[in-house]
Length: 189
Image 1 (cartoon, rainbow, N blue to C red):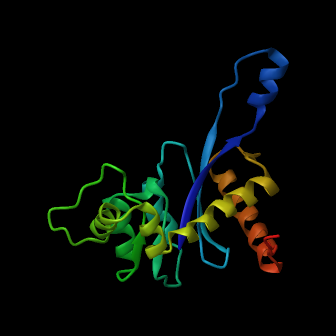
Image 2: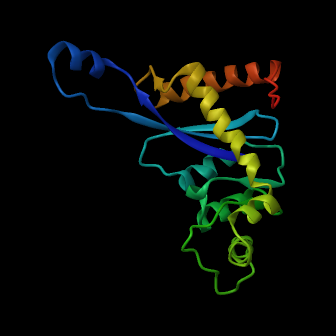
């Protein structure tokens, strides 16, 4: 399970009014949270208002998932107890691979997964922790966001929250179908 999020702009009559009547546009954004597997398939997506942070969206991303996963990978925005608890409540034996903040300290007990990451960083460095945990697979989520934005753009057409959610699911389904057909193969020359 690899998660990431991105912001998408919501287009609507505000853009038209701005050009036509020379008024300041009220910019509206939505945050798209994606959860994918190691085969580049998006298994869950959640569209929220910008006020909802990455940690708050994790329980909603995990709810529709029926297949088990061994490892949860996220960026530094997912560091914290709420994400850890949400993942472990959904999948008790999952390993949570999230880089701790540079000022992070070990818990009082000192035996959590996060504490282990902090100890590895203090004994070695961030790169060593990334190699040990396989953190580089998190790049798949960055690639999914990039593919989404290149194919469908960074804007949404629908304005009310329920309509863009449907728009996001349709886009994600189309992206999964394209990914399932074939992925490009890169060769270093």
